[in-house]
Image (cartoon, rainbow, N blue to C red):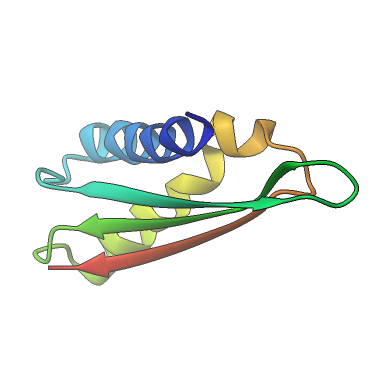
Length: 91
């Protein structure tokens, strides 16, 4: 659920920027992989997020949307020990 919340929040934040700036963002989706750790206790160690983006975005729009993920409240709420990696792919 934490991974789903992170991916959803990233897409929502990017969607807000896209709507504000008139960027066509339809068809974007994300997948997330969770890695668990057990030292010193069992907890989420890492979340790897791949955001699949439409291929028709200009370099400027790509930069703008990729930067938007840094403003995702879920990402900011995670403990600093949780490693979050983010990758963007374009159709």
